[in-house]
Amino acid sequence: MKSAYSKILGILIVTSIMSTWSATNVFAYIYDGYRWRGTSVSYHVNSAFASSFITAIQAADTTWDGAGSRFRFNYAGTTSRNPNVWASNYASGGSGGNDTYSDIGYYNNGATLVYAEGKKWQSGGYLVEVDTTLNTYYGFTTVGTAGYFDVQNIITHELGHWLHLVDLTSPGYPSFCGTAAESTVCSGTYAGETRKRSLETDDKNGIKAIYGT
Amino acid sequence: MKITDNHLVAIVFIGFLTFAFIYGNSLTPQISPTATTTPSQTPQLIGSDEIIAAPDIQVYSQGSIAIVEGTVKTIQSHNSDTNSAYNDATITIQKVLKGDPAMSTVNVMIPKQASLVQSVEENSILNLGEKVLLFLGIDSQGNYVIAGSYAGKCLINADGNVTGQAAFSMPLTDLEAKILAALN
Image 1: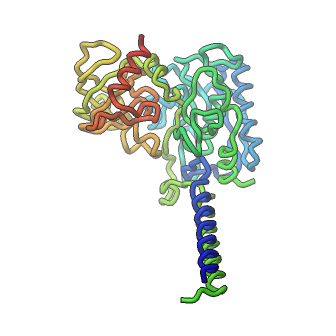
Image 2: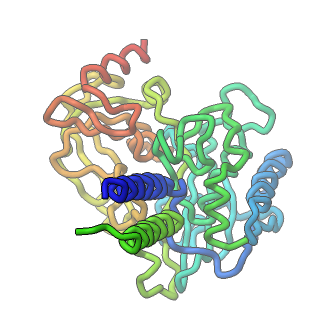
Image 3: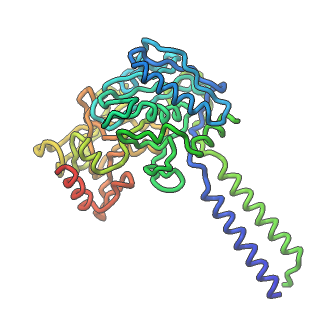
């Protein structure tokens, strides 16, 4: 009898440990429920961007394309459109909002400590447009200029939002924001940061969960 | 009651089901309720995401235009435009840590609640009566905004502690000292 109780106790302990481990092993991504209808999105980049910036943007796109999911970002060239997601009329369809085009643009939005922002549109339950605007109050670079923000780093983060992955802010497990192991969709950055150029396992799990492999 | 091997098998089976259930749920991404509502065919703006200054007292202290402590007294549509996606919150200032020391009030432009879809953005809202320490930026239109969208808002609690981004959560007196040290 004593032996049976010992076995039960052992089983309960093992089960408890496994359950506790699995309950805390939640992937560090949050998907906000909307997705693109297909498995790709075409985007344009404002033509005023330097070619090195466009190359950096495409590198960010390629990083997500290589995450192991079926989803692809397709660079469709430059455009004269320049979305300003901070404009007071963006939400009502002005300044590049609700024009069916997904674009990357720029605007000097002042000293807000917000370096870039994306805004998303849905129709019928699917994403139909996302625009991202870089805040050129701050300096951006592709060559590591001191005090400037790395374009590829910023855009890799922002393209995570194009997938509708949500900003993470938790400094500890499981997203590790603020550490070397942080997810690319962690919302904080600093001048010179490049670690968001590459994806962490959680970022890849996010895109694969939404679009499949 | 006598414990038989059948009981043990049953316990193992129940334990396995419990494990499988919890583990299965852990693999499911968190999805907001918006995905289950009847979708609109008219394109609808569903939210925004920013990349902001990482929460660091020195960065926010030096990068902010003003840092104030005060209480939210009024909230109204930005520039009295009810169609605006923004509100203006008027803060009665009790202390200025950075900026014009003569400031007694400041209007801070904040998103309207209805325009928010993500929990992380909730902190970009100011609510009537809240006592706050705010790191403030200023946009190109001259509007004061919360620096770092939501990160620059810190609630001052009755117990004398401040809660906000983790790096800013500490006794108010400690945060004030760190801010002043960062500015010197």
